[in-house]
Amino acid sequence: MGKDFEGALEGLESGPAPSDAGAEATRGAEADPSSHPSVAALREVFGGAILHHEVQAGDEHVVFVAPDRCKEILRWLRDAPDHRYDLLLDVTAVDFGGGRPLQLVYQLRSIPHKRNLRVKVELPLDALEADSVVDVWPAANWLERETYDMFGIRFRGHPDLRRILMPENYAEGYPLRKDFPLRGRFSRAEQTRRALMLDMESDYAPHELAVAKRVAEREAAASNTQAGGA
Amino acid sequence: MGVEARRELPVLGHEKDGSPGFLLGKLDELVNWARYGSLWPLPFGTACCAIEFMALASSDRDLARFGMERQAWSPRQADVLICAGRVTYKMAPVLRRVWDQMPQPKWAISMGACASSGGVFDVYSMVQGIDTIIPVDVYVPGCPPRPEGLMYAILMLQEKIKGESLRNKALRHEDPAKVGRPNLPAEVIDEIAQPFGNSTAQNRVSGLVSTKALARPQDRIS
Image (cartoon, rainbow over all chains, first blue to last red):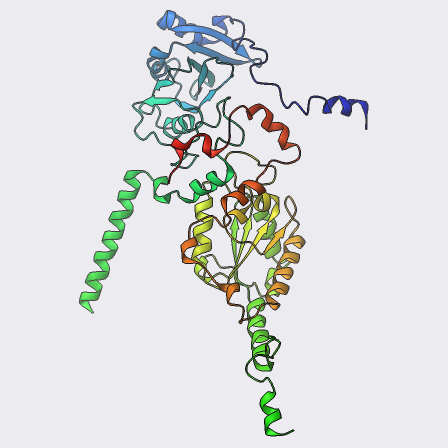
């Protein structure tokens, strides 16, 4: 066994270090606002609601905004003719553990201006709520459901805020939170039992079930007239 | 040979030691021959193992020469369920329902590490072996197994079928009360899903929170 490998095995017994070992800052250095045209404009229009601006990985511009004005800012970013972020690439969140606030992340792309922008909102752990942007970008619908499912962030005004990845009867919490145990909170037997108790209709939205019901009724009516004719 | 002696000959029934007589034994052989020679597989493919299954089904390995010319895409017409790939807890009721919909006689092959034991996915969302959900006849190791591995499992299953007998009622018995229920008792599921190997180190961090169902009785559904 090589020396490097021996070193690598050290600490295996104690497991990985807790996520909050070094409570390093979750924000980088303030960047020059003139380096991104949209950030400069945001500073001008919204002023104090733009809390922080930094550059990650060379050219990825991140803007931290105030939670209560987030939706207003996002709508402005979509509609302002000089910016027009018409494509919502992703909605997700980041948990840094150690009691630090969750970061809600909107990844935007402006197709006309060929620009990217990442908008972040910091949400304290005891107030995990944000305004839904489904009426701004319809693409946000499932993305927000996923963020709700994995992190427990509730989106005010979402038309259909249900779990999307985990089963509907899942009661163990929100799996991508740092305090979530890797194997879940229940025993394997309990997890298996609950999984098999799932009513598979709960995977569908009420309006989808209504469509299925209408189709079934129409088919029943058609077969009745067929039987009557014969 | 007198009349009395002829009566002693086991023609229809069973020998005195319990083994099948000539006719029943030949009937078993005939039925088993028909069964193992025309197994219709239902591919329950959920991951990369299904790609290897497709390789086995395609012309190079040619699954058809083992009597599997037709793949059953409906559980109602399937004989053997081949679970190829990882199964999540959300998929578990689907797998169980597909199995319950298959008519007897039916068999199951668990293909690959994930289907057989959860594999590397010792996490909150993954079934730790489909034998907790449905009874399994043959397990195929590998990640994923080569098509030849699955071929060998199919041949093993055929050998298993050759040893079956119509007289063994327990073999094809199904308890209606077990429909949609786990295949194993709770304590057995907990025991076989114990963390092992390197994954025990992972639990140390999360071990601060109890993973026992008893710790949070309010979440139980009775």
